[in-house]
Image (cartoon, rainbow over all chains, first blue to last red; front, side, top):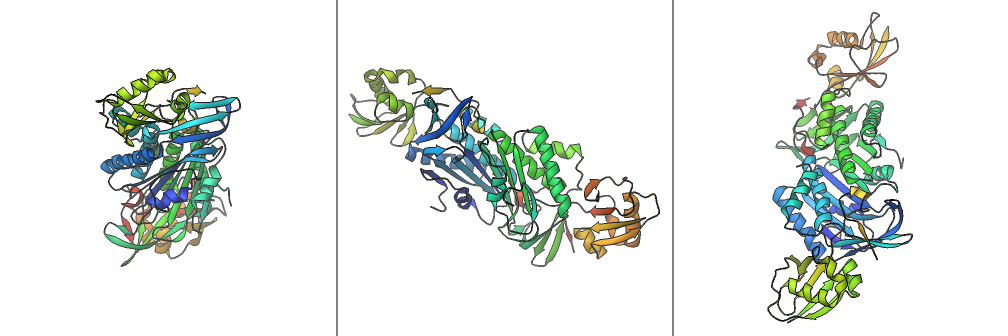
Length: 158
Length: 158
Length: 100
Length: 100
């Protein structure tokens, strides 16, 4: 498990595992992004979030994002770990690590990857509020949509 | 020590301390940047790097960078931890953590801060190579140089 | 032909099942499988224009021809990643929540 | 007046001291302190145009007037942060190394 770059797990996430999956002597720069569950949303108090995933497709989707990254940034190493099930306030739902010889690339890949995860990973948030639960529905996942890739690249500042 | 946002220390850096210094229930996004010592440089094998700092001014400079960040991104929390003394290959020389409700800001602040550290922190690298040691000299530190601030903002993609 | 349909999140709740065996006249595409599904379960119909589709655990177009025994997944718009839809991680561009 | 001068990194090595007590005719600026220092230690002179200066642990202009007892630090170009000058962390814009 220590060095698995792409994971979907119901266990609590540990940034050190994502970092270990990308670390190496050639990497002068490592960027780790952690997304955590917040305690409020548009004025509603959030109690917790359940994340549902189509796990085998999600892992394949992370691998695909890895392929996209390798094509554009061949020397950057990437890890994406996403949690499923009940995630409490303050706990991490996603951890992304990128390692590179160059800090610009480590930042760009980390940002690109979180944008792509949000666009195309088959994962769904079920927010539990005080007065019930809400399914959050964002983007229709289409891995081949060039417009979405361009949006992710733009947000990655490349 | 646990929650010190700005530190200059001869102890090994631990990303968890920088993360702990910025974490909070309002933060949905945390970005941590780690700079590590690489084993080669322009064809020369690097054995280790000694970092020398003017420690009290370095801490004040980190606080100043924090002030710059607060002015532009009032809701982002920042930590900067820099190591001094002998740092071995693969070990971290600097860790920067930024936490925000918004991932764009967490990325921007983390990147802005590392650029500013490199521009104005009174810290010097002494590279130890197989055939001797080299002082690395980069930028003349000038915290009031607007051009340097603009460069950092541009690299932070803002 | 027989295919196995997988449903997730709100689609799963609306259908009341996460796995449905569906018989289709051959030849059939993923779109045909959806149409048959939504005919039998009209509550799913509003998702016709926003679903994604995977065949045998790989993203696929709705025009993909199916084979007997294929596993076809229909996915509502996704919302993985971090935090909360309109604030956490700056998710400002996501759609609104769907009440159960 | 008497001021205490602090030197770092290669300036420290070239001067052979990290702390030097300097007597200056009043009034004096940080620039005057540097000029006196570099007169006595010509090896430092090439840094005249690239040093930064701090007075009492705060960055200051070379035009800053000094008071008796001030601590004046002269700083060669800095290179903190990460990795290695032309590769680690993408430090492409740094100057070349200075052999001891």
